[in-house]
Image (cartoon, rainbow, N blue to C red):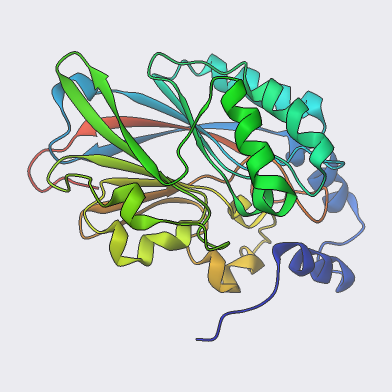
Length: 286
């Protein structure tokens, strides 16, 4: 199937122009309530050969905060407060921190800098970060003590046990360096990968990686009754929200917390995901 060259912003504006979002109380609900109705989800992720020290290890995922004219700094701070309250062992940020304007980068990074966890706060960049200024975004996050995994990997240790953690720079911009990011991972041991774009789940480079954590889709941002999320018909939103599994590898796609294009969410509540790692029994992976 040919790649659809339509951005989510254009798609949402097209829906509005077609009257699918309406101008009634439903639209008011989507823009005034659901857009700020953050949901703290909890999901158990069963992983084969998970080291004993990482049983019940809690990962808090924050994605797509999109500080901009549509998403105030106050809302970013609310997201940070909720994420910090989830008491994760590790926090991961999966891209798209701002939209369009460089002036949003420093305030957003400062707000995100309030996040902390025993195993650290780790991040990758998304397509909007590169559209704004990827290098400026990376430096701003690093200055706040956030580890940016731009095509690198590391290990998270607990006692004598270790968990591999890698991050890939945004795939859609052509900045992914797979050899550098995952080429030296031991695929016989559990490994996690941060990637803003969930489409990478289909790539051969991801084979053997236990869990990929992504964002980008906003869960479609709009999901209509009886129809679902129209955005799912775009190729890049094949993996729209939640957990997917294939051949022992798993993907979790966060709905994120921000918006682009239009200040609305409907049927796709903003999400802060808490993923609890569990050791899989035989035949229980995924």
